[in-house]
Length: 545
Image 1 (cartoon, rainbow, N blue to C red):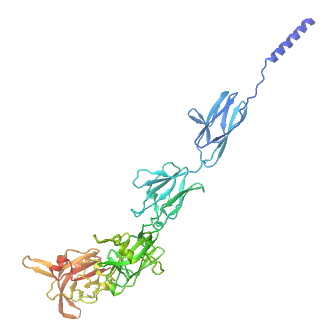
Image 2 (cartoon, one colour; image 1 turned 180 degrees about the vertical axis):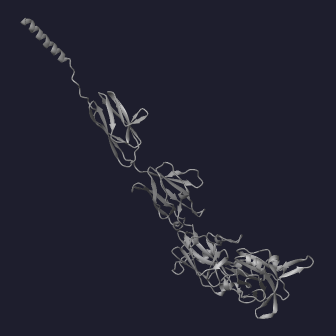
Image 3 (cartoon, rainbow, N blue to C red; image 1 turned 90 degrees about the vertical axis):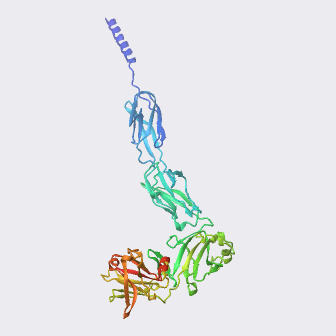
């Protein structure tokens, strides 16, 4: 019995030992070594690792994700074995600063870092685009170069645009550039608008320049500079303008030395006694001469003097100078020799007569009678008005208000022929009349005409009226060409002399009251004068408001 019990116990012990040897112990997973990786914005990255158990990957940054087939997912899982997963960047808002992210792997109940990924910072980039005005598309240029065109006499105007990988704005252009500050959003497509035109400022035209165009990030203080250069004018190039940089080809002074300005009413005297010319050239010299039958002759009434911006012209007029026309000549110094111009302080830059005389063909075309306005402009002084002869009577009705006509040159310090070449220089007068003269006609009679002269005559053969009086509208609205409706014959008396009547015309109040502005009434002594359109007397009527 005891022996049997022993065998049973021994068998149980052996069975217990056998069962213990077949029980497996759970193994800890082996994690892959942590990797240090780099990725750029817009790129994708393949990560390879080996897992000895089922795994799951997660990322701690929202700008990084996994590619699962055609789907973008924030986490990924799979079975044990060698694996390759693809990671891409998504929705990066701050591309110009470096970013870091951690990809973790979980196997079983443990999680470790699979890789640390650093996103490299993007570099701010700007592209400059230029487009010819006639071109359909623009092209990229590394820097801007503007050139002076001697034939075109200016700088060719282009359209300029920018693209960048950030929201941008032009912070500044070089001071010598003529351009508009523009802005835009991050894009690869340039936008050309009416604000895109770029050129060189007129005051900076002569000399060469360089500078930078500064582009600023609208969301930071970061800037990028783009180079810009301008060639400057050529050594033989020259331009001239008024002091307000307006084009001109001629200036006029009155007989007493005042500058005349062109207005809608013609040439009008100013209170200025000098004229400033802006000259654009690398360097220039000047001359003032009259040109006539005997070639170039000295001019004494116009005095030039060089200034910082060009030339100042002043007058010293004597009776000998009345009615003269002069040429002010401007020549680039590169076209002259060292002995062709003066170097003394009083007349510095004055071109010697010998050079002007030898280069007449450059300045004047004898076959056409035209001057070369590239190198010269005209300057004239008016004639002194005559004080004698002629005259007018002017009144309302026979016994109403008498007006005192004044000589044209007493009202305007210039020649009436500057307004109308056919006006009689010494017998053009002016009156000012109220805007409404009521029902009385305005009566006008030229003095000094033959006693048997009549402004309106009748041809009995044709039974028609012939008018030796005409109305010419100067400003406003006048019944020009309607003399038969406007004028009737009138006998006009000088104030205080009621015994001697002067033949003239009555200007109908109906037509006068409806008119506005200024007009000339022209009086012809005979049909031949009217045919030639050269009146012997004229009077300007100005309606007072």
